[in-house]
Image (tube, rainbow, N blue to C red; front, side):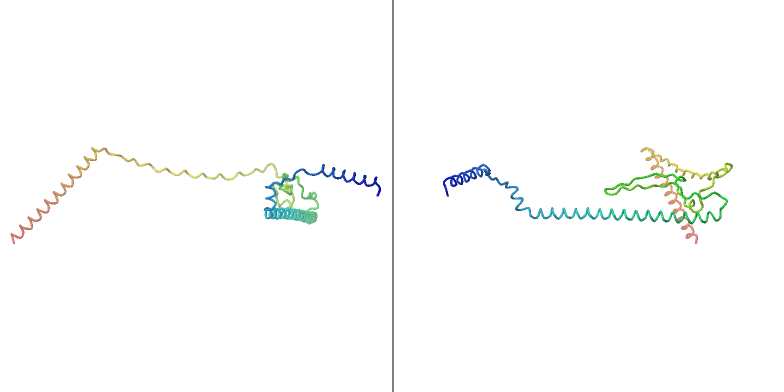
Length: 218
């Protein structure tokens, strides 16, 4: 090995050492709280993974249920259209055979009743429902009602008799006596009792005297 090659090699080694010194991290500092969380948080991370998996499963179930509801609504819509078409065909055959001279049955038209569109929205599905007001099933079987003559008048319903209001009981007047009046009443009652007792005693004494007189005569 010549001198030039050895010098070149030594220069390359020195340059590599200088680069390693410049790229070297001066100090490594550990965060104790993060280190503690990492060492003691295995159970917490396991629970978090299980919770995330459960949420993904719930979202997947919701999507499947929404798809099933959409398929069910689509099937019901197709079934309703098929039934309506069948009913219209059967009624058109009956209507045309029995009423050839009358005008053709117009079918089920949305102009004979009031309609309004309502939207129902949840987290996943937006459904638009057409609500038909004043729907009469007889229009499907017997056609639209014929206009009545202007001479016919609607008979008003009979008036509903109003119940008679209940009579209120009369309040009894309670008279309160004064203290002097109560004392006078008690005195009168006492005098009456004494008079009755005296009359009863006199009657008993007269009866005893009459009995004694009869005995003495005998």
